[in-house]
Length: 463
Image 1 (cartoon, rainbow, N blue to C red):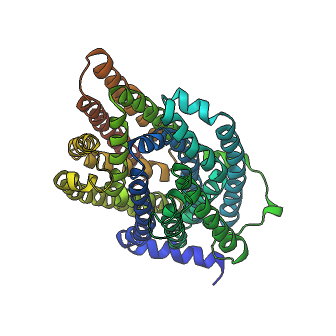
Image 2 (tube, one colour):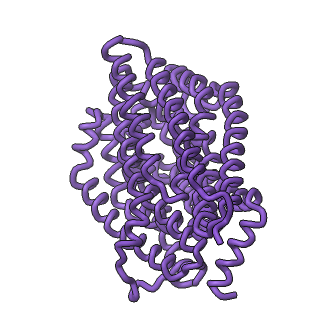
Image 3 (cartoon, rainbow, N blue to C red):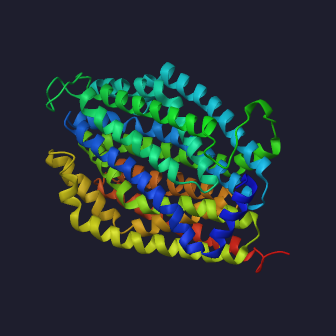
């Protein structure tokens, strides 16, 4: 089958049964993200055995990794949406050129972020509020991760390219490979000889970073072999024939840059919250970090549905199949809402038991459980907000996500938390209340924006 007919066939199958298409894309993403989430949870268990300060040292790295993730996933979303629309328009040449632009973007971002992290990383951690032994532990982790950062960035863009053409299975399998390797390598690099009955290098928190970097290097080379040498994908790479196009670059940036900036805003917000929480206690920062890892379990199916919506909405919009587009939006958002209501109930009931897997520190347990039980009431609103944003990105609209994030983080949650803690001298629960209120505001803005956008679409497919 030719690449052209392959594209037409895939779009036709998706249009015949959009709800089935959503799950056919979402389930592989869910498995891939589930494996990654499993790694994050196991990684936290291993790091937790090093003590509360090790967890806090990792916590101060999180805003920086949000920045990296923001640029990679944000621009990657722009790549996914653009490729999906080109495929919907049956324009393979532009889809290929879009993927090639993504590769060059990955090169540029890798050079800038890795060199910045290696040169100024410790100073940045200090500015974020890390000091003393926590600063040293944070830097031990960061300087190793900066070496492996380019491999993570490239892998992120490769996943986005494959998502744009509707191939979710290869990223799932490669993510699974990387995660299994990471889990195997973690205890070997983190703990001393025979700590887990085998050979150990005893590198502590730096060992956790090294295990991650090695697994990501292997993931990168698997993607390279499959995409450049095995002709696995619908997209073809011929970098010798690469033609720079401001039109394609703008198509990626108009969706991807606002998404990236929104995640950078979230990174700034996380840095602010770390400063607020460390003012309360080191244990509070550690508890927030543990609870954040458990959030991933709640949002695992939601991010999977949202990523699938970006691809499907992009294809249907490009093909001008507006009725299928409307149905898919409704079905995706309702599915995300129902799943999250169920998982929120489970979080509320079992929060205490789950948190105790990660730490034996009673003060950390109490704070993390308090966070999860309060936030269980906000998760359904967050789920709708996430899916709404990804639908708008699939429609080629990146600005709403940025505006909503700025309002949520910089307009509501961070200022309120600062006010409650430093002016009113309230307890940590009021930080959680500030975050909750901001999710309700974001929910209302996002749903209103989406409804307004859908109303402007034609009622039937254009002739």
